[in-house]
Image 1 (cartoon, each protein chain N blue to C red):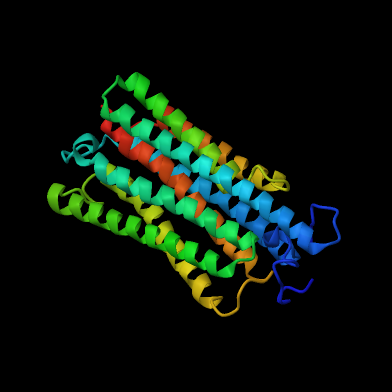
Image 2: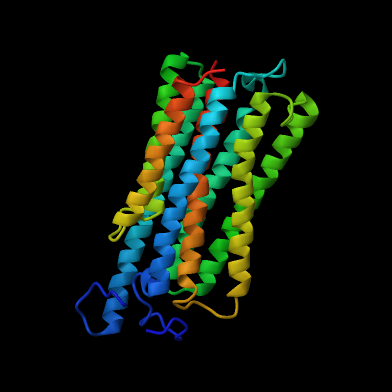
Length: 207
Length: 110
């Protein structure tokens, strides 16, 4: 089967992301990358846990964080994880249009999350003078949460690029692995956020 | 190459079977989503209600780990066939992660 062969719903394979050798390699390589990302975020989490009480006279975590904002951000990202699952569901059914629509919804939810995070950082800097240079807590906090935010930004550009690049091409075995891997990345971002809202925000509120 | 899971030579029959399977799979995904939503709410309420830290912290970390498993095995399809090597890669990362966090929170202090 040729990668750019025009396929129909009948001839589209059951696991399009792994139907070609290139797809298989992407799949395997991407999971290796996710193992590395796990280690990267672990080092940032470990640093944060070690330094989170070193506030250098600034506002401690328990007075800084506001649960409603974190809750809304969590809901946005969690829902975007489900919408990208819907996109992959339609990809497997060879329904390119519906896949694009669900990817679009995923991007919008991700964008809302990102804007909320930017507002949150702005609020901390201007109302609490909580900056990356203020204290060890500030450095560890912005590095950890900011690295996650950078991943969200990268993911948004990635998915939008894929959507535009393939908008006229439709689905084939060349781009199916690309969509699948972008959705894996998006889920991984959500997994990291689960630990950020638990370890940084919720544990920060527990005194 | 193409992996058809049914023995039928008629693609129309095969596609009906696959669509049904995909729809079933999607139903599990929605259940997963509702479960993670529920676990998230429990975690936020546990913190909002101010129980003792000795209870709350291990409890919310446990909830996060359960959510991680849901995400990996359902949303990221690790429960499907052919995910042995991905599991090896990811869990190797998790082992290094656990050791790093353990070291930073126990034997290193400032």
